[in-house]
Length: 247
Image (cartoon, rainbow, N blue to C red):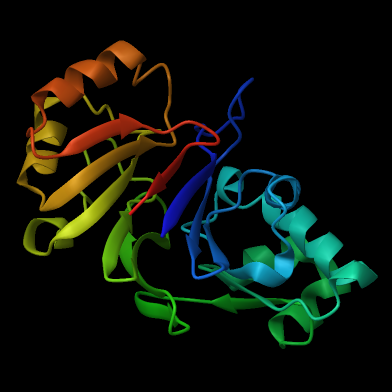
């Protein structure tokens, strides 16, 4: 399994960082968590055809987490070179996404007739294609916000999604069940605080990647200080666009 960070910025793109999107590569398929980055050109630049996209999963309805869907949906549904593509797209709010995609696509996409298959989800297991299993865990960032537990090849990855500032909505499953990798978003959370460090140190995790980084809250110096306070058994790093890790 490979994790590829396509976009690691906070709510706005930066000179060297797009908005949120992470790809998980498993057995020839790519599964995208969020789509704030221009996902179609980024995938094509890696020679990834949309027919190999196993699904796109949106944690919540803020634009920096889904704007790449607009281009992906338009091109994949309109271009003849994408015949045969069928991409499940799971979103937490039907009305917002149907309005965004306008009348041209609305009926097709929500009734399974387009190449992108939009579907609303709620908490619990939302996807299982025999290759990857995804469970949605509610968090409190905005109404209908979720963390995702991704299970594949015997590994477990938890994508926190956006959490509140002091992480009162930190997924409790991290305390009770082993997780190979926690990808913790830090657009709103100050990582280098006693409360946050305590929660990370209580977690049964092997690796920690800080993602969706707000540079004014989490400078490289602040992150380095935070990492020095985290249990030595947890490998820590900050994400950057193009970063790849294997599990």
